[in-house]
Image: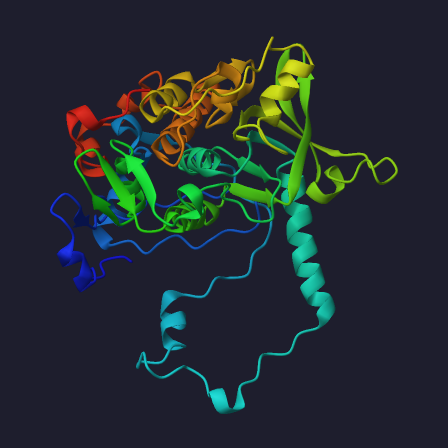
Length: 405
């Protein structure tokens, strides 16, 4: 995908749909400080000029397409967990064959390294239990890993001082963003949300007012892979949120259980849940359905909001603007994003166009950063980034294509 040639068939496209492959316009990401989670990932390789800049910078800068902003960050405390030394890039390269057509092993007599079955069990269990301990009290819990929730988590994860837990009831995160409308493949994104795709380096065909990704799964898999590679994020999939923690009128976390347990409370004896405290909860549960809009519906049940009128009939042009505009903190401690916004406000549904999900998620992230007292694009504190850095690290865009928070 990165830097590859477009197939010849694209040359026959109408002039309206011009094949467009955009490369990132910024250097590789600067180093991410250590997070308490014991599962750190090796930072990307950096050129010597970047290393020199990092040594002289007073703050780590994080790129964002949202409102043309770039976020400064603060380091987290170092982890006390001892980790094995990661393999160097040279060692990895040496283990690969110099010829791409020849595998680095003999397929006629292939054997894996031996392992005890108990080791596999211990490795999975130890890591998951450590994650549960680490994220039992976290900065932000995002409920729902659809396109809005993933976009929100991606934007939040740029600030390595913020710990982010994502709760997804399905085994496979992504919500409805694996396909376009009516189970078709292509994903349509209206401008200026294509700036988020540029940031992720996702190829698309470009028209005057919108772009088309050849398969929706390309967006979802890309944002997910970028997000989950970051050390301050944990995805708990196959986990359901059954309730909210509320203290003195403020949402302070979520009540969780295995999704299969939540779906079978009526067939089994009492199966008590677990809890996860959070400074901010972001609800991105989507529109009404078996697990849809559960955040706002629970707020109505406990009297924190008066009504959940449900989304109105489809109107793409009205819907996407409304979803972004109405993304907000609906009660103290809880931000609502994505199609769940339409449920609480009676906004129109938008159908198979996804730009509002991305930008609503980004806006929710900056609302959470504001609530946490971190630099954000809502109150303009990202402007504290030194001007000498701004041009190099902010993705270029037209003035009329910057999304207003």
